[in-house]
Amino acid sequence: MVTSLTATAPQLKKTPLNNAHRQLGGRMVDFGGWDMPVQYPAGTIEEHLRTRTHAGLFDVSHMGEIDVRGRDAIAFVNRLTSNDVTKLIDGQAQYSAMTTPEGTVIDDLLVYRFSEDHLFLVVNAGTTDKDWDWIKSHHAGESVELKNVSADYCQLALQGPDAVSILQKLTDTPLSDIKYYHFSTGAVDNVDAIISRTGYTGEDGFEVYAAAAEGERLWKKILEAGNYGSDGGVLPAGLGARNTLRLEAGMALYGHEITEATTLLEANLGWICKLDKGDFIGRDALVHQKETGLTRKLVGFEVMERGIARDDYDVVINEQPVGKVTSGSPAPFLKKNIGFAYLPIEFANVGQEIKIDVRGRLTGAQVIKAPFYKRQK
Amino acid sequence: MANVPEDLHYSKDHEWVRVDGGEAVIGITDYAQNSLGDVVYVELPKTGEEFAAHQSFGSVESVKAVSEVFTPVAGEITKINESLAEEPEKVNADPYGDGWMIRIRMSSPEDVDSLLTAAEYEDFTKAETE
Image (cartoon, rainbow over all chains, first blue to last red; front, side):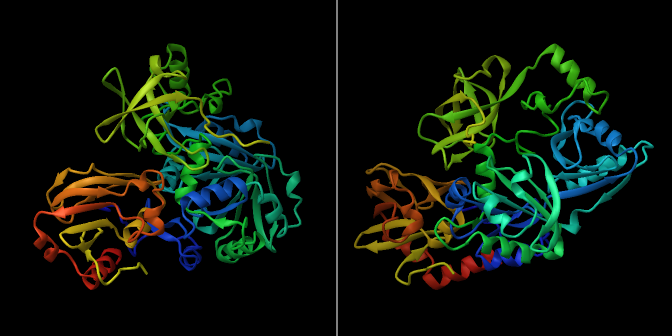
């Protein structure tokens, strides 16, 4: 019955935490060429719920990091990305995207500003090589030094309402002073680290970047500080929970909601398109699309009948397939079956009744407001 | 290591069969439930429906994926585990007990002979994960 049992091939890339995952009983799968834990023995639902109620610890060391230094660092990155890099101050991070001349998406990323001549880009794992090539090939004489430093770093994401108190045990950096989407450099358990108040779960929390060689020790220290193993303690959380958490929180996943075939405006990411900031790759296309209007748009939906929408299922209106599900899953905290889909603009309204073709059975669903989940602040 | 009870028969699709007179009780193996992760939905046929061997009789959905389940033996459904509608997590908690799925009155009881023994199934799953 199970056709997707993914065996671990020896040529897969490994993060510095590979052994730690195996020791914890992580079930390893091939994730875009990386040997990663999809879940630990607690299971995706418990890992998801624990992250919402206490804390979850995620290995995201597979993400790519690109260092940009030099006099023109800001100007260069501003030309390649859609958000406005000039608005950043030292110690601030920004969600952004690199776009094609058509306004479609090469990748979404975080831009960190250390100083006016030093930026740090964090990109998706599966696109790191493509992004690196794209960035190098669009270098046009600016005075910058580019370095792909992906292999140098481990990245651990500690997410959830207990994240501050757990991490504070391991650092003298006053964590409460770090605002959302800001970061500080400091020491975590005496290891130099970038401590960033960011994440991909919809919860408060941190992403910690440190030298790859320190990854395993840091991971174990955080689990220990979070009372892993006790009721309400931190749980290591796998890619399964990472996906359901981000989906509930209404965040786009590259390769699903955003691709080289979707524009930022169609994906509801107009808020990271600063069309007035000056020229950037894709700006003209996005300006044009804004003027002429969208023909389709990404919407969130909830399945109202019994059934679970999955990626790539057809969306049907008036017996016609009109779009595709980009991500669909049970939402463990909301206890609903939810998803994202692209719909023709005339149907892309909250309240619109749609059908999802669940393996031949047309299942009732409704367009609802995303994000599906918002934490109480 | 996955639990593989000695007294059952196994399919390469990861179903188990317990022979009970002329009937077969069928579910998915510990290895299968572990691979799927948290089961959130089980779709089963109706009693009285007839199936050939190796035919899809329903589906099991976890948070992550949906998988079809196949009849290891041919016959007519005499009973389904209705409690799985409300408590699909039984498939994870007790795959060989409370997590059973269907009972079939076997039309050709010799179908069982072509299934794997516990030892053969264990070797089969080992080969699949290597």
